[in-house]
Image (cartoon, rainbow, N blue to C red; front, side, top):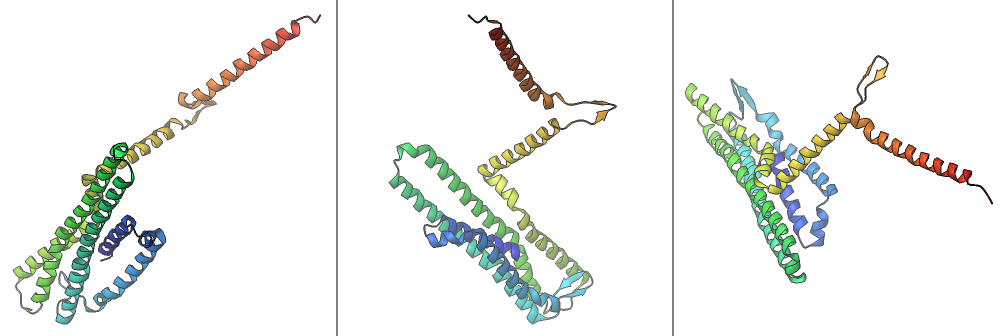
Length: 270
């Protein structure tokens, strides 16, 4: 539940940052995000507390198995709070963000000469399209990965009224429940792969990050001084090359100055 609502409020945060309203943009800050995280954690901890009371273990099955009322409540809060509301929030925020970006684009075209901002406008439009594509793919993946679990919850709620089941029925229900829950847990870890496959800007920044890490590691290896062998210390050439060049240049300049001073001293005074 926490991951779904964190993503939902992240969409709200994106909408606030893209809005023309100054008050909404002020809400998109780190302090507000911390407060929202704390509130969401507390609220869903209280809502999910019924699991501590009504969950049972029978054989290889864990869940609300005999209490029909608790099973109905569990199914309703998961379907409404864990699927319908987050999906509606994500879709609504995506539509509103698209409208805000289109309005800002029209405003820029009206205020700034179009000919002088063609390249910048093209890059901005490309960035806006990528962001909207990310949001759309996130919503689609959320619906696809969460829908099987919602259907399984509805089935389990209805199946509690039929206590006498065969071993084959229990095995099939256990397998279906496992696959549905596995798909549900895939969504929180799918963001990286969605961003990498969907956004060219994200891929470019990721490549830059890997290159910077590689360069830092390579520079660290080049600047590393090898251990001593006997009384001799072996230093890689890249370590002392630049300092030695600067020392030689300094010595040459100093020697030239000394020679000039010596010549001046040898000139007779009339």
